[in-house]
Length: 182
Image (cartoon, rainbow, N blue to C red):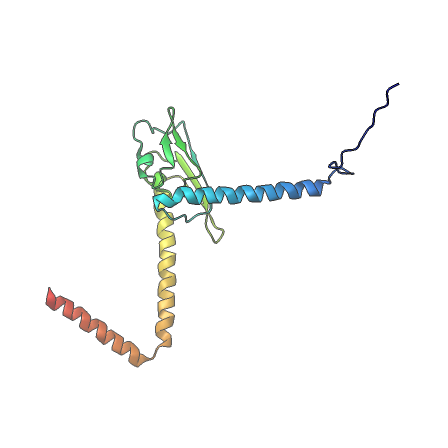
């Protein structure tokens, strides 16, 4: 009779891994994947010169209402060339899209392109019509203007009245000098 030697592989764990250990491994893999995706996105956007304002978002094009073969307005409007004409439909490269809304603003069909994006402050914005894009931008810009005026008013309140009068006279003098030059 032949005798065989059975050896135990030393790399095998003595007990199976727990569910928590497996979840930790998956989470670390997800973090690496997200970091790799962000790095790739940075590399792709760098040559375009477009600033990434929204870290997260979604864009969806309704193939049934899109008449992209006839107009291609969204493709022309996209600052990062994230939209392209594929086989009979408009395609989106998610890694290039910055969710700016230029495609929605230029689309001639309402509810054809739907964009959902998340701001840095956590607010989620959804829009699918050019009117929605304009209203959203106007609301955001008016909030920025209000904050600017509020901070400028606070600064002016804290300066002395003599300084304000002097600044006003200097500004008024500069204005009249410019009128005289014309």
